[in-house]
Image (cartoon, rainbow, N blue to C red):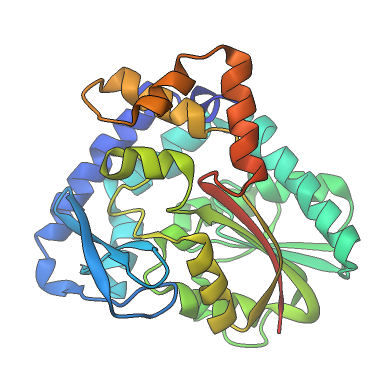
Length: 329
């Protein structure tokens, strides 16, 4: 997989340009921003990491999670996700223009992994709930497995929820935190690429935990600050981009967060494919970014060298894409 397969440069840069406009919209309401402690481990001690587009990022001194503070209040974030220009672009044009590529490269393999986890850990496949269903592509791929009797989506964005409903799926149009306890129960719950966006991750995960059957599985992915491309590019990383990405949790921070949320990690891995490609593309776009010489040496290596290094990152939990399988404690 290449970054351009799932994030064509021109399209992605158009999205980021709109995100910059959304930053200005939110910063005009900065009185509604609030200071937060580490969203992973709740520790107060932190150091200044950098400022990006008017948002200040801190580095937790206890777990090395990277996070924005102060950040827009939950009310402002809800307003942003319903009215933001970049949100509308992603949920309409970006989804449509990358639909087939993302289905093949992301969602079909993701559905296959879910099936393997269900078999491996003996979860009951009666029902599955996907939190943040977006365009409904994962719901479609899960349905094709014929593994679950019931497939349910949770999607707070009205336009995206409507698309999922048009595809014939039951969709709850709300945030996970807004769903009354006991309304929905599932043998498997999924939450892909959400934690980086959430105002308060521990509250979100506790809400997700309440959706699980007693022996149910949670499968989630997110970005990790300890991954290669984020560590190398740091403030220049497009993965660290407000107002969308507020939390870049470290692996140690993920462990603390899951414990605080009443969840037990069964396995944690970093199965990313794109770290090396992301760094190469960033340097091609902006040669002024300073990176260690050893990184340049890797990027100048043969394709086999770059691929071998990416495999090393995956196998040693050093990629920026983290995947977790968990159960309620």
